[in-house]
Amino acid sequence: MTRRNMTQTTLGRTALRVPGTFRGLPLERLLALVHEWRTRRDIERSLGNLSNFHLRDVCLTKADVDAACADSFDRSASQALNSAAQNRMGNW
Image 1 (spheres, rainbow, N blue to C red):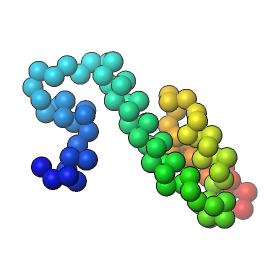
Image 2 (image 1 turned 180 degrees about the vertical axis):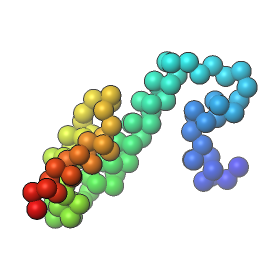
Image 3 (image 1 turned 90 degrees about the horizontal axis):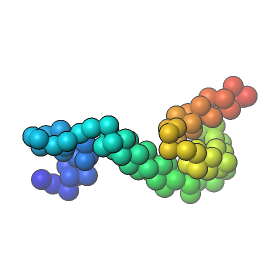
Image 4 (image 1 turned 30 degrees about the vertical axis):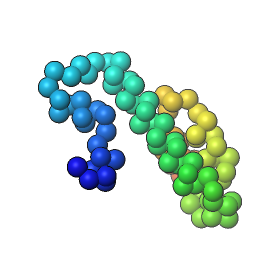
């Protein structure tokens, strides 16, 4: 298995392929939390270093990025950013 394929394989997909693996509600919740944590980490890495000038091009501010990443893990950070961008786009 190549390194690229290993990084694309998630714990949940692996659990589906292994016969007899328990996949109940607690594991689903844990996998969702891990996925959301990784999404927020990627958002902080990609948008966190941009200047306000560059963020304004995509209708966001640093406060939007910080608020989306600091919000509860029950809400999707990417959806929060999308909503903030759509709200700000209406102002132009």
